[in-house]
Every structure is written in C-alpha cells, then in structure tokens.
Length: 219
Ligand SMILES: [Zn+2]
Image 1 (cartoon, rainbow, N blue to C red):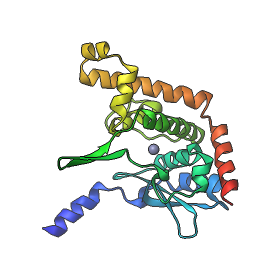
Image 2: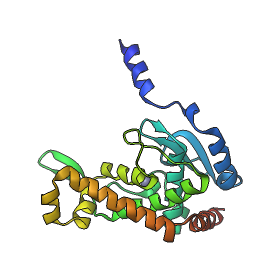
Image 3: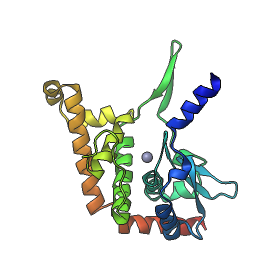
C-alpha cells in the first residue's frame, strides 16, 4: 500500500526530464555560461552552492517549466545589488512575514502589499524574457488567458494579495461585485500593470543590464 501511495504521489510531480531542453540550452548559453550561477532543473526557487555560486531551479510546486527558471532569473535581476552580493542562502534573502504567537496559535502575518508589488516587478521581467524567447506558460484551467493573465493568476496564492485587492478595488465595489468577481477584477488589474511595466520599465534590455551588472559584482 505504501508503495502504491508513493508511486501515485510521484506521478503528481513532473519529471525533470520533461523540461524543454532547447530552451534550457539557449538560456544557459545566453545568461549562465562563465558566470557564478547555475541551473538545477529539479530545484524550486534559489539556493547557494558550496563555492558561493547561485543555483536557480525550474520547479514550482509539482510543475517543471522553463518559465519557472525565467521567474527566478527575474528575482535575481530585481533584487537589490547589495542583497545579491551578500549571497542569500535561499529565497533571495526574504523572510516570510512576521512570526506571531498568541494563546497557542501561531503563524506568519502577511506584510503589506509591498510583497505583491515586488512580485509584480518580477513578473514584468519574466514577461519580457518570455516574449524574447517566444515561450509562455499556458494555464491548465483556462487556455485563453494571456501570458500576463497567467502570471497575475498566481498572485492569489500570496497571503498579501488580499491587501493588494483592497487597495485597487474600493470596499463599495467589492460589496457590489462579491468575492469571486472582485478577485477576478483584481487579477485583471494586476495583469494590466504587469503588461505595462514589462513594456515601459522592466523591459528585456533593462533585465540584461541588471543581470550582467550583478554578475560582474559577484566576480
Ligand atoms: Zn517570485
């Protein structure tokens, strides 16, 4: 029985071999060769190698996709230079909210909508990278979503997304729309912000500049 369960658990996770190999080779050639940074397909997020090299993964939860690597690359370029040079061991040196404990209950409180704002800048860079290579992540649930909508959709998993939503949609409008329509509208507003940031500020050219500036600082 145990074996059966672990097999079915395994099948929920993408095989690292399923990664788009051509896209992987290309991104390696363009951004990783001869730089103090490595790719580990099966990894999620960011780690640090023993020699101080950054390691970026291609996994997000059970899914393996080149766009997840683009996302971590976006974090590298968006993170402040001083923080990158300090070589954070994981998670780009971010702490997940402030820890609280009251009467036996505990958890991490969502910070402000600043964490959504930062993620938004990363999605804008990610969209610029996706556009450059012509590769996008297609939503399993809705194939009609545009690339910026697919990116914005993942914001609902952020604890601070509710704070962003309350900022962009008034209480009155939220009451009229109801929960799911208000959430849908907030995602649309976020998608549009991502699209504009990608076109105007967090362009592919600016991404390249930020990436190689950080590489030089690490050498
Ligand atoms: Zn992120």
